[in-house]
Image (cartoon, rainbow, N blue to C red):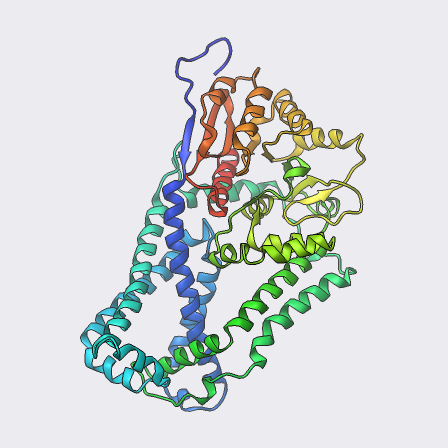
Length: 500
């Protein structure tokens, strides 16, 4: 659309992610169950095969061990990832697990009496006593309900993944996997990515110390005694697998508080280690020939955050609020930010995770000597020359991620991008707070551009991201929510629209 030939239809093209995100939640839940169950099977089978035991004579464990290990690795890589969960090997793992859970429920229904006998000889008699209070058949219904739920989640997850695998993104004619492949081919042509392990500043011993502390704290629950060693063995439905499950549940139950505390502390320490060992943009750019991806935002939006996709992190947000308040009161802002960072995902980190394979993700730092935030690699310049570097990066960057803001610097960046004719490689993100005010600034800054009419016709209430397509077209990426999963998918699709 140009000023000389304005069209009567100014409505922007839209990509609504609401249902895609909901389907991805079911896929992620299914892979989480696969990961948990496969690890619960692999670890004991590894121990049983490592030490001389009767299990060595059971072919089931020999077959189960590599299958469980492969399922654990595949599901771990697929959990929460918008693309990996849809790849062929991940789909095969998901469908195999779904079929297995369905057959398990069918077998349970056909073995009602066997289930009742097993419940009566359960290693922990309190379980059986509690269940039979509601009726003699309750153990059977309990088992069917638990594994029926497992089968339901697996089935819905596998069907959702199959749909997402072949769903075509509006305006591209490509699926999420197809869009990702096209982007990867283009990125591979631009040069080699930096080896981030090599870029770690090894002299920052306090970063390594924090990482070592995270590992040590995560192992603390093993030092506490529990009842799992006192439980008598039984013969279950499939060899010794029920024994393993009972002991694992008892281990978690007896150490629940310790595990929860250690998990939070270890997460904070690990985040601190990553934060301290994070290299600067100058180091990263000096070690790669790939064009950078530029992040532009107001410094006030450095801590713009969204709800994380992990339920346990969302649940920890409000209970940890008093601790954050105390840390802020003692001027321990670094620790408070680290604590806040595990319960709320910074929008910058979400973007960095979605773009981590597309090239070095760089941004202007706030001031010299300040430790770079997690997400984009920071480059700090004198106040008078930072604009020169932004204009330079406008020309060399393969993509520009801009967070819509209210400050004069963001206005200048948006207007400069339009003046230099690089808006077609800008992906504009709208954080969850102050959406209407931010969008008003965007429309004012781009009032004299070919995109003006479509921007004014766009409803920002559900807007996550905007792609400025050539010809004055606006592609609005929307969703009913503004959580981490929504922004992650929006950024990946926006990247695909720009790179493909």
